[in-house]
Image (cartoon, rainbow, N blue to C red; front, side, top):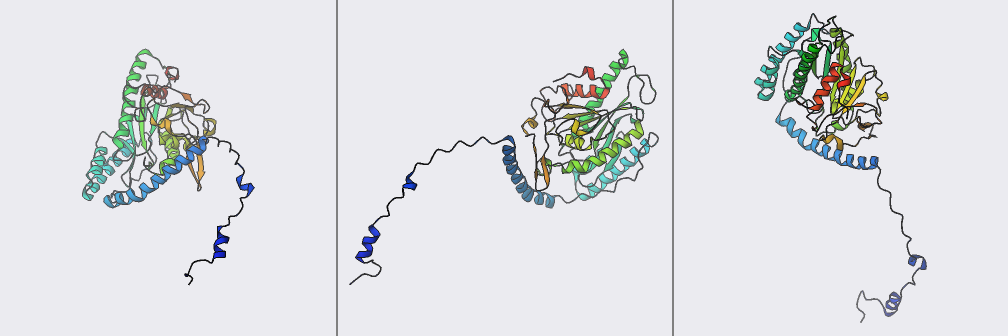
Length: 378
């Protein structure tokens, strides 16, 4: 009796026979040449892909939780003001202080003590704001010094994570610069170093003012927006408009310097074309979106610096178009090929460019004063 499933003898014999080997399959495979190492662009795109994925996951998980934990803070609409003039500065300052105080009351009633405290500090009688908007992340443009009589003006443009809550850190840098300018002013006035007519006909030492310009919604450091030029493109028109209005206050003869930090250098790069400023200084820059000074299309003198301990040195200086969005910011502004005047920034890190007593702060102050021969080069 034959067991079911057992092949007959002939079948077993046939199955036992093996197919003769194919000589073609037994030929040795020639060794393959080693693959060339990936280009900097390829390495950047791989790293960027991992960063974008991590950022998207973070945004998908963290942002909804944060939004649920912290609803939007109520605040009044900004004060309706005409472009400022020397005659209307005090009116603008008063209106914006009142707006900040109302924003503080609304934030306190909403239960947000942190924002309420920040707004309340901005409503102090000693504070001078050309713009204040307590809605969302918040916008603020503050004047330190006597803008009505200034003939040397510095406009500071901040980088990522600058909001009304973190504004104090940004203002501290502007205050340090104004204090150092005042010390240099007195020194220069005593020795008659400048001896030039000011913007308002003065033959005395220069009068300086520093403006902390938080005039755009900055990206978060842990976000996909910080990798692209989108926020900078949105910020460029209001920055250009502000510089035009500033000229209406200080006049065409005043020396205006734009001092840009981190992502703020991307903003300044986008706004640079035709901008009516004398100097643009780029510190701690990931790139401007331009490959060279000439590509910025500006008549301003371009300066650049990077501290020895600034982590921004690790950012790849390339850019790529992904899904219709430009990611990365191009050439390194402190590289010789970019063509900027590179000045010394000492051993400081990414947040130390306006640190009191630092090499970078001294050089930035001398750029603002027009003392270019006194700027130490890197």
